[in-house]
Amino acid sequence: MRERFPRPVALLAALALAGCMVHLERNAPGHVDLAAPPTAPAEQVEEPGDPGENMITLSSGLGLGGGGDFGGAGSSRGAFKLTLETTLHFGDRAFSHDENPPFIPLATNRYYPDRSLGLSLGWHALDTSSGRVATGPLYLEAQGFMMEAYASGVGVGWAVDPRSGHHGPQVTLFGLAVFTARYLYLAGVGHEIAAGIQFKFPVTWVWSR
Image 1 (cartoon, helix red, strand yellow):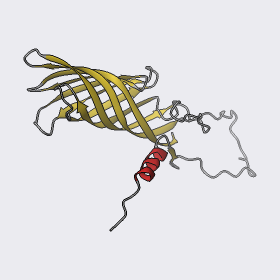
Image 2 (cartoon, one colour; image 1 turned 90 degrees about the vertical axis):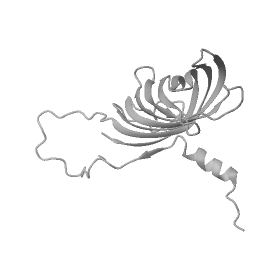
Image 3 (cartoon, one colour; image 1 turned 45 degrees about the vertical axis):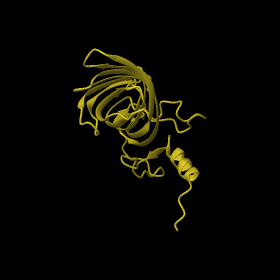
Image 4 (spheres, rainbow, N blue to C red; image 1 turned 180 degrees about the horizontal axis):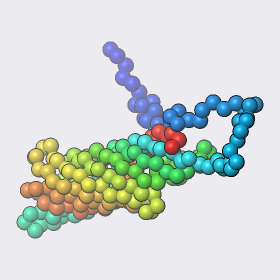
């Protein structure tokens, strides 16, 4: 009988990947011979500057919050929400990241671009609006993010409940990278408004612009 992979080891491996940054060699500087300077330098030498960098960020985590569900008959009920989400973003920024991260790696903007576009795949994994613990719909969102706008952005997408087939639009607003507000409408079910916080752990690939 094959021994199962120890769960603590798998958990430690997953946490080790969170918050890591991978440097790609694309657009890296070419070979320079410092012992043989150019024989005819330009009259005005351009001062070197930071070229900035491109970034691909894959982040996964969960969201916790609460809100209200408003049914088609005018009924409403408060609820606790738990959402699982994975996001892939493509972006850039004007400066290169700090090679010496702080003691708490995620307490920095080194993992976030100035602006980015991406997709999020998520699941409303827990919903108590029916008076009992139940699972909710899956969703796919297109997202945009801007660091200068208080690390905020917007996501627009579509949600589908695989059990009932109900589906409809979803809009998510997020700010300071952790706070979220969401509106969801499922045809035949009703409206949902919820707010909360999200905890996501990024893995980032960077290369010079």
